[in-house]
Image (cartoon, rainbow, N blue to C red):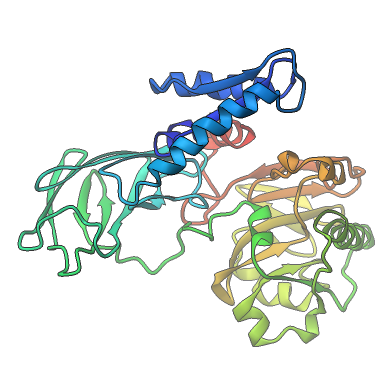
Length: 384
């Protein structure tokens, strides 16, 4: 439902068997679309469970064939786009490059006019507007006027090949033309978390070569490592890359997300970056957000831009966070932990958690420990 508005761009035909339990999903989407004044076309197979009714299948095919004859609109004059994460940040010629807060709905309504573009935004701080060659609907001899929220701006001319690109960013309550002049850490596309995002690109499991100070934490980390290796093989049918901490190279750091197992005392790579992480982990305690946890039976799982290469992730003590039982349906392949969590290793692992989760949250838009006041909103949004 938080993504329903995006079907404005996508001609859609839904089908359900009348007796199919999964019909509830289409009914839910129909309700969400109705809130945006969109009437979902929903073909129902009478007295049918989870399969196509022959006559209903013909009707679906008739409608889809008609849509295929119409073809895809390459550069629509209007874009309605909503997202809750920068992972999924583009719709046609609109790209959201920055948000005030992940897991709150960000929305852009953009319309091409005779002499420019009118844009309304919500929960958006950075935008790119980009038309491919031949697609820009503006006169090449004139600058493009941009009305965005309460600001009136002027962008560059389209190029001679009818391409056009414009970057916008917001400072305080005012929008400005141009990309943000900011070299610090920010959440951005493919670097926004949560933990599971690290496994959508190349990664390597990094084993520790030393023992830590606390045998219970070492044993927990080894158990979680073994489970992650097995889970990758069982669910994704692949063999995870594994290297010892002493064997990690500059090429590994440049080209892969590093998944570090163990503690700062046991894993040399983790020890190397420990003082550059927002959660402090020593032999005595784990400190985060003004709270401290005893290190003899607590551990950290988290995702963060790798301090050795901020274009890649570093992950501590976690594979993907959904359970083995999710193997029955990829609809269950959804994150069960946010950006970080503190785990009580004395609590046995259960299906959705690697132990006792005593604290967990998302980092803020600059990868900082986020304010307490926003946590419940983010948790509810992600749970959807």
